[in-house]
Image (cartoon, rainbow, N blue to C red; front, side):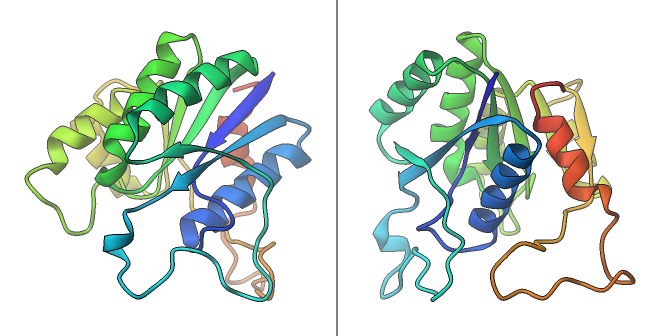
Length: 208
């Protein structure tokens, strides 16, 4: 069974991109057939005046991906689900961190479920750190496209109950990024429980 992981990876920079790439690697190392779905446009350039959204480091965390989703073009959302169906995808794992992506990721999730694809949201932030009146409606729309959730803290689980009561969820500590370039491996005393990546991978795997 093919698993698709939707989220930013190289050439994008940042923690979400690194996490997505590491999750893809963990699934592949466990023998899963993984399709990585990247974005052609993550945010409007106006939100990054004078700076780049791309990873300019000398040792980027490169990941092979299909750049199908433009966060501002609905036609790419519909086309992405058509491509997932044609590729035989049975499970879609969506990285979630901000209401800005509610229209795109929420629509993709809902369309995927309608097509018979199971949808898992890995929630890095159930609610944004700085909210707006738009957020509640946006989050209700986005989370309505999920069959289950993965959250990384008990407090996040409590927030999720307000938006998607009754939807199955799993809580795992955020795993350390031990495979990133130039990042030393934490000592045993500082490392999160070893089940961090293992449990996240299990929730997103074909056997979950």
